Length: 467
Ligand SMILES: Cc1cc2nc3c(=O)[nH]c(=O)nc-3n(C[C@H](O)[C@H](O)[C@H](O)COP(=O)(O)OP(=O)(O)OC[C@H]3O[C@@H](n4cnc5c(N)ncnc54)[C@H](O)[C@@H]3O)c2cc1C
Image (cartoon, rainbow, N blue to C red; front, side, top):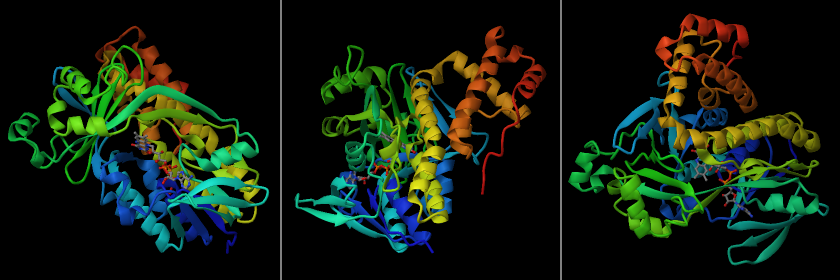
């Protein structure tokens, strides 16, 4: 039976799921979380913020025995509903059928469910306790409570699941540099809300399709691509949608600098998102009171300090959100780490090194794909060449499923390593480009020859899911 006590900093999505899995494997786990207990105080001021759960995250939740509970509180999204400027919209399915869908979940509800599960597994939580610093040589950490009162506490194995601005990472970096590089995207985001359809004026409800509960098709991730920027909207179970505007931070083209307040933003929306604006009745209040979030990719050369401390989730590899994989990747991390630690509970140095060896190439790969997906979402989803490649890919996926699977599907619906998905995606894309070079019309392509090209150029795909 594993015995070494573990101190986890951060009881967010990744920290809570990791804590539950470690406790299930027999470890004594203590978690220090900066915020108060959201089950007592509510989450993030009560705003509905949601995120997309995909197969990798679901698989981790299955391992933890929590997938069914989470899916009961989730809304299925079958594909992207793309809204053009002229008001036309169309669904681009993500997968082949309803076995390949993603799920919109409330961040707050998911976090609370994970906290309950971790506590039930025996994890001890200390809320309102913020890590201030760590002395790795003395094996002590310094914590501050909400009123700023500080105290020291001894630690054994320290794991930082304290997110993109990780204090554990800062402490490790101060002890011996981790080779940190943070690349800002130069674009920010702001969250707005479409309320349940019943709260909208009748005329607005009728013009948006006359749905009873949801103002838009509920089973889709909505995108309003506009080239250099975009809005997206994900459904919430109670009928609302969380809208996110992604926009450059600076510059003379539309940016948060040129759209600094609700008045300027409303004029911008009425020009660029005319169908969306009437669905957001609290536009002015939301725009002026919600902060602009920043988006960056974090790269580290090293994720651990020998066997004393390790980073996981966003603390190790924060990425931009355009593949909807940050949490999914962090959830995948938790299963890998819990299994490695369970197999060698008293060899944390070896476990942490192996965890980095296995996960870092995959974190780098999803970081790259998430950046590429921003361009795809805001731009290419409406581009004819992109659509032709998609169409040809869909035909090949039916005719040669052992040799072609769209990269998005490999990332979103399979368990193959992200690094494999990136590499395979590049090889497949080169062949699609080759086929479309002289015949841009998919209807003119000899599909038998296309299948042969894929079969002769690429090995068959590996098993897509395990367990
Ligand atoms: C706009 C946006 C949309 C996204 N959409 C998706 C999506 O659709 N799908 C997806 O998979 N991912 C998405 N992500 C990414 C996802 O939010 C993160 O990958 C995920 O939250 C990482 O979880 P985490 O537990 O590592 O970090 P966090 O969720 O940031 O949790 C860190 C926790 O540590 C606590 N903490 C911080 N500092 C301290 C301290 N000093 N002491 C103690 N505790 C501390 C925090 O209070 C928090 O509870 C999105 C991200 C953004 C910004």
